[in-house]
Image (cartoon, rainbow, N blue to C red):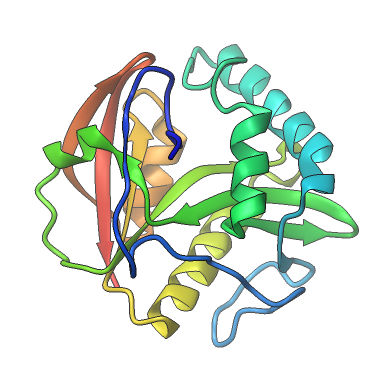
Length: 201
């Protein structure tokens, strides 16, 4: 058992159907949703780790330039993504052979998720570490990625998606609120306050 979140914060594991392998077919496309036309989705592999970390480090630098100190060299770590990939729970949005975005989806969350007033019920999935490559910002990729994840979860009869978002990241807050996620509580971690959010599927 490992923590998918921040150093020093214990993880909560849920029994099946909460802990599951979230697998998708290679280049599986969204159906019935408008999306960037050149984006394809696939499961990540260990060989993608270098490119993922390059993407993440560039995002950290860009956020820090805006005074947003959400991530650092401690979290998210390469080991987090490798474990996600090994578990089959790490998804990629790919364009022109490049990784445009990365996101983990599983049934695990930190103990502080107990602070949330969750209304949508179970089973639920949890989104972690959604990150878009800087060159692909502003193209609606994060929103399309969320829609694809939500569609896959509906097909698997999940009732809700849960996540946490840094309170000092206005762009991320706008993204999730526009996508229909609502605040259910908050958690205070090493980097500060994070809002707990949920969307009913």
